[in-house]
Length: 130
Image: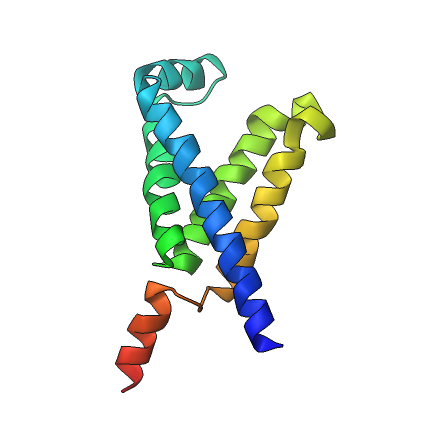
């Protein structure tokens, strides 16, 4: 049964990583300055766009590899809470915050549990225990 849980966590980790890599890359490719301007237009400091995009891109890569999984999970939780509260909540559940809520739950899972199967974190902790 333990292997099934680890395989499930691996699948969630890979999907979450790919999604965040895509969102972060899109922000940079589409012109991060435009995203910063949009942040300003909704009342958020524009520099936050750079932070959010970096967390999404670098964090997506890190969580995909299973590196600093709990830390990245926590950062994703913060980013998603911010997105839900500032933008998605007003759009309602369907077509609004439902997608972000699912990503938030997955991110919270990794914040609380980390990841083991095929993760850098696991190999580092295994090497330290020897």
